[in-house]
Length: 209
Image (cartoon, rainbow, N blue to C red; front, side):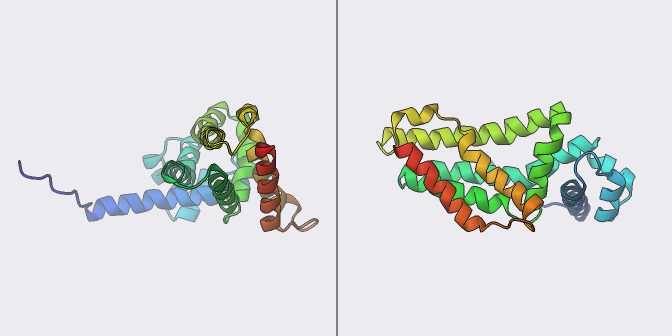
């Protein structure tokens, strides 16, 4: 049987995909700067260089655009973290350290603090968005952390009761650091590299006690 030829996108398909990505990127900027409630699709359209009606050719609502913003900007990081953990050959201690360091690096990328603040502060008023973000990001992250801790327990690196600890304790300080940087950096700046190291050291000490 003749091998199927690889599909090469036509110029029209490439233009459509470029336009779609421009809208998603513009949505990210508007959501991060204005918040979900205040963000307007008119402004997204201006930022993307398209007419407002063009947005509806790709997304039927602001909620749908927000979900795609999360998919494009966060899903690759989520999947990369899972793949890295599954192939990692070192100790659970090393893996957890690298994972938490990457989490801090991600949360302090450009515009990410604004997006995190918006997600934590606004999506609670939109149950479908809250469910979407929790199931696709938070729940997945909690599962990965439990897997890493289980690996540490199995190898005798972490105490057995570590699995009964709340995974929120591992996540919350990093998320709070992003919000702190956004809200209070001028009044009370923090060395976030030192902050991250202190958090990771605290976590590892607790898991090993």
